[in-house]
Length: 271
Image 1 (cartoon, one colour):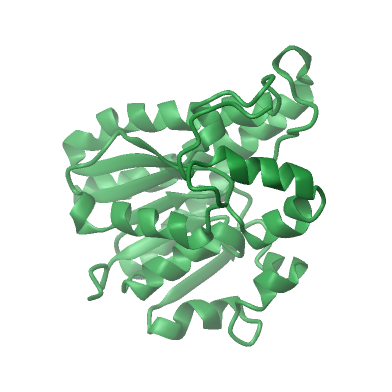
Image 2 (cartoon, helix red, strand yellow):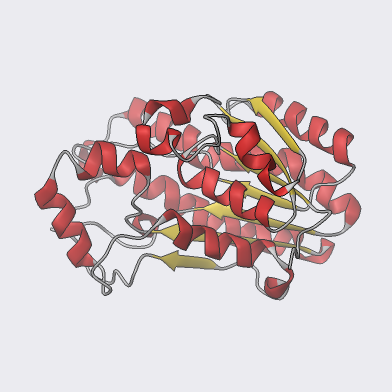
């Protein structure tokens, strides 16, 4: 059943990785898909990511379920570019039903302890995560208000809900904590217009980039991360896409203002 048929979904930062999984899942459920990314060719950086594409082509991959597609290169920290992108999407399809604010990432988990954060690093991490989310919502929310419906899904992190070990990775953790609380505020703001807003908070997810850059570089640390989970495994992009699919669809209509951890049951600090 394509319960999103005729709907329109925007996914930011979705040219590869978990964001692409979100876009593919929503396309499979019938939604027309608009993707913006700083680099639309970023899947070509990792063989595992590239091998997922149909004939190495992002647009062809998204169109395999017969949905329409818009692809634009956009910097999610640029408020005006995001507004122009949202305008293009609305002019093309006349509506925007789902927004997944996936663009983000970064942070220095090795060095950024709370008492030692470099101001430039904090600004950069906040720009990529909380401000990109705020700018994207500001670009899309007016259209959802007009139609009195919409589903907004933001991406926090389990690090925004708990402290890792000695507090390292504080720039990223604080930024993702801000995303979580912004989403709670957003739900109260937009609820009267029939719009829901929820955040997902992934744990350690084995995306292509994660395995190529982090998992392979430090097998001992990878084992520690696996053992943090009650289920004793890394998450998969599909695990996260399952949750995004649920929050984007009609079965979540009475759920808003929630921050949902998808981390395999991480309940203790890492050391």
